[in-house]
Image (cartoon, rainbow, N blue to C red; front, side):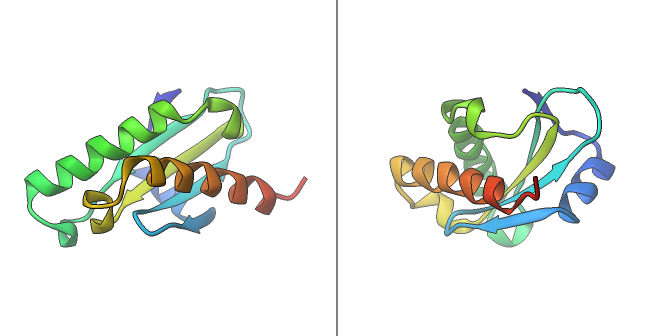
Length: 111
C-alpha cells in the first residue's frame, strides 16, 4: 500500500464513490493501471486544534494498518476523511466501521 500525497489524487477520489461512518468518510476511485492500492488521510480544521487533528489522523492510519488489504480493491485510491467523533469512538468499533465501509464500497462498484 502506498500513500496518496498529491492534491490531484485527492480531488479525483472525491469524484468517486463514498461511504459515511460516524468517525470518518471513505472515498474510493478505481484506477486503470497496475499500481498498488493507495490511501490518503485528511482532517479539516473544523475538527479541532492541530493536536486533535493529528490524533484523529494517527488513529485513522492505525486503523488502515490493522484492516487486511484483502478487503480493499486492487488498483484503487482511497481517501479517509476524519471526523471529530474519531477522538472519542472506541478503536475496535472504528475498526468494524472501516471493514464495513470497505465492504459497502465493494458492493457499490459495478462489475
